[in-house]
Image (cartoon, rainbow, N blue to C red; front, side):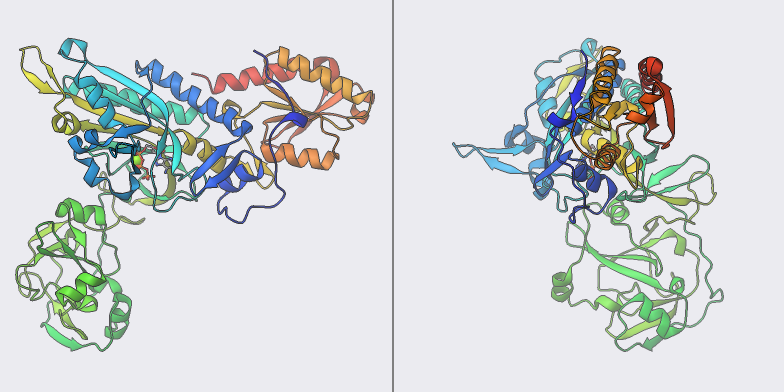
Length: 576
Ligand code: ATP
Ligand code: MG
């Protein structure tokens, strides 16, 4: 099938100015290049150029899934509440899950993910270990009522995801497919032209414990990463860390209570006492599900990682203003010395063995200095509690980690038997015993990946598409549409390029050259063939590489062949 479009017929309303609602390049450029339009917060129309590129992203994902033996299928968007009640997530998922009722008043939701549907499907169909493993995937519209939809397609509420689910009789079989999926995800990133990194991650709402995220590296990315030269890398949400400590006070001293009027923050305390922030301890209060008060103690200059707090005390919630009032706790002066009766004290392991700190006295306007564990207070458990930062020690090799930012484009999870047990999805093993399926799930953000490509491939003039995902590969730009010498040549090249298999558009609009160049650069077709009077007088057309800006003259009778060969070569670079 030949792909030959006319710009005059294309629905791609480009904008001259950056739209004010867009903060980052991919969002600005998608709007400006006439590729997407917003319908409501986090909900977009994909216009023809975007849709062409998204179809290519989907095709790359499809080829990589098919190559590892996952089978494409399609599940419904609307899901009955009963299945979510069975898995326990109807209550756990929170307001991100968009719920609705049908005319009979029955509860449904819009699928944010499909573990429930697929587990319910296979529990009625797969009976024996002989039928396993099975891997199924779909490319599908998801809905998540995100708290802060933003950055255009990077964090939408309605978005396209490829989600795959696999069912296994043994952990070894799961591991094998998980590795194959992870490998496929790397290939998908490569074929999209992304610079990326796999990182240790947190499993969030999906659950399970073994998981890897694939990050497209970008300054604008929402995720903060730490990585080490040894190859270890992690999302700071989940990054184990080794906090370097160099306490100023190394000799034990007396515990001394100090009047610290109106001192509420660590910065104020450090300044008041004339000590560095890292010689103080910050105490954060939380409430365990059974109501027990928990104090988390971290170095004053570090942040408590809520994910790690949850690892320490499952289900713990940090106190809010109301809790502080209700429990009559002095928010700005919390500390582990003489805490309220029954408080569980958990401290960051980097503090272990140090001798003296500035610390809250559990009384407004008072702090201690010289507090020492064991002597002055008890720590119930020492663990890793803080958000990892560049400069920390690498938990894998002991080296020093660096920081980067990224866009999470995909994630793979080993779910184990979490869903199969909850939902009674079992098979008979070799010995005839009934066992829950061992499961994995694997998600690629299709529309997020598409936007991530733009985030990495743009310049001051617009998008710079890698050939593998460009909406079209070549634009033929006649400089004078009315000219009966120029235009027929351009149109002939356009036809011949299409016949040679190149995806090509002709800018047949009766516009000034400047307007055409600006629009074609903005949309970012990888190559432009410019047909003008001057060139033709010498029997040549101009060929421009959008990425490098390099321009060369091509002889008219060789141009089509040259361009087609180049495109074939580029396609091969991005092929399976
Ligand atoms: P995030 O942490 O960014 O909210 P997530 O970890 O909740 O994402 P997963 O459940 O792992 O997302 O979903 C698989 C993939 O779907 C993600 O890696 C991402 O590429 C994509 N995705 C998730 N949420 C969104 C969203 N709101 N908009 C666009 N893509 C999304
Ligand atoms: Mg994820």
